Length: 182
Image (cartoon, rainbow, N blue to C red):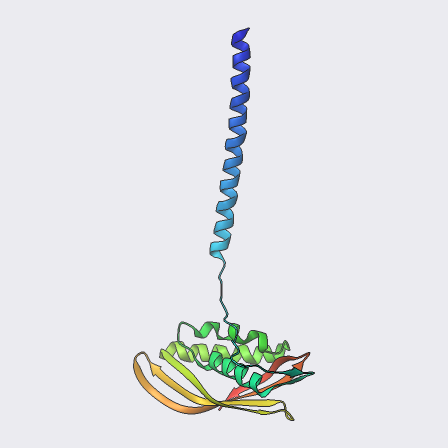
C-alpha cells in the first residue's frame, strides 16, 4: 500500500508541474503574439509646437504671439522636408487642419505632389521663418521666410517665400481652412 500512496503523491505533483508548464507556454505564446503585433505597427512620432512665450485666448480671438508660434511650426512642418521626411508632413499638421473633407483632400493632394517632386529630384529644403502677420478681419495670417533648397549636398536655390493661411477659431482652437505658398 505504501507504493500506491507514493505513486498517487508523485502523480499529483506531476499534474501540478504539467499545469504550471502549460501556463508558462500560454504566457510565452501570448507575449510572443503581443510583441509581434506591437512590432508590426507603424509608429509616427509627432512633435507638437513648443511655445516660447505667453499668449492669451479671449473668446475666439487668439493673441499675435500664438499666431507667430503656430505659424512658424506649420510653415516649417510643411516646407522643411527631405526625401525621408516628406511622407510624414501631413501628420505633423493634421490636428490644425479643418475636418472638412474638401480641405483634407486639397491638403493631401498638395502633399502628394510635394512628395513626388521631392523624392524624384532628391530635394532637401529648409524654411526659415522671418515674420508673421495676422489679418483678423479676413481670417488670414502669413509667414514670410527664406526657403533654402539643396539637391543632395549641392546648393540649388534660396528664395523668399510667403505661406498664407486662411483660418477660423472654434472654441479657442485654431483651425486652418486653406494654405498656400507663393
